[in-house]
Image 1 (cartoon, rainbow, N blue to C red):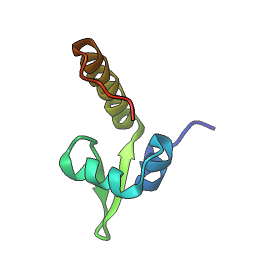
Image 2 (cartoon, one colour):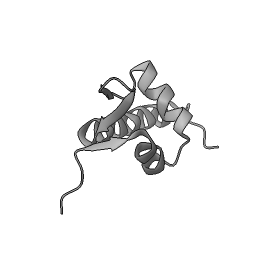
Image 3 (cartoon, helix red, strand yellow):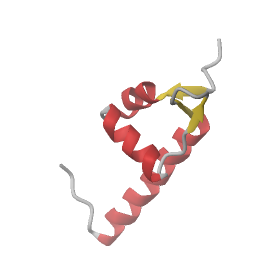
Length: 73
């Protein structure tokens, strides 16, 4: 069975190993593209958008490392 096309914000949080509030902040800021479905505030993130976000974060990290400004926590 193929992976679902859309993920809940909770699924995204689990995938990224971050809190739900962090994912909501990413969607709110537009850094991670989400879509609101229906009238009850049901939010979803398409798999392709999550992958695009991850690739952007990899690119930003590579750039930070090359400038010598990346810090590991």
